[in-house]
Image (spheres, one colour):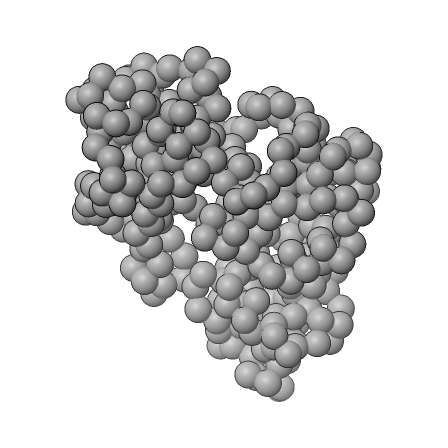
Length: 346
């Protein structure tokens, strides 16, 4: 029963976890930086990397303490190698290297997107996975459809051509005067809103499994500007960043959210049928959206797995789960491996 200590610092969460046997969480510590970045309306990379340095040692120590283990009880160290912010990745990677070197432990670099997929192995009392499965990885930086035919065996079907779904949520939240992070803010604002109040476009990109949310984001921008009385659609008006009438925000949020969800669910279900998968995995920060989960439950003719809320966003337990399978497969990385900010899963 391997016990993996893992670190995750790809963006603005400083996380460490200990997972046993690839599916049992012994500790899962996350130090959020959300408050530090809220005033910027998004993640400020230099602030993120400095914040990681400040807390990572304490986070690792807390994870070991919560697991009632010491480094002598750990079998391997897993760490996010990419994709992510270069400065943030380096902090986690160098810390993991130090831990591995100090105790003579194997080092295992993990792709952050693979970690999101393996968060589904951490769901309690989940049925055994029977391949092939289809994974929708949907977050602030990524929206991808991946066919998984076995452990560490992936075929990328498609992905976003521009904005990721989570990125679009963040940008439109700012238009609506809602706080960062945008996904949860829009979801809260949409409660009680009419999802058909505004006719936002859906980019289906027929004949592909790709996504595009840039046009939807632009449509939301123009709709917000049009709701301001007496302001013709000039360049000056488009640059106006004041939010719309608060009474309209729930309807704008609900309509925007519905447009994203319809495309995510529709394309995922079509791909699931095309490739005859046994079930669908939905992972990444946007998988925390309850309306998205409800729409999958309503429409999907096959099982859909979604992580519990605490495992939807970035965490180290998912990195440990992925590292466990790579450890069992014999992966051992050298201490001179570099961070890969643009590392593709496939």
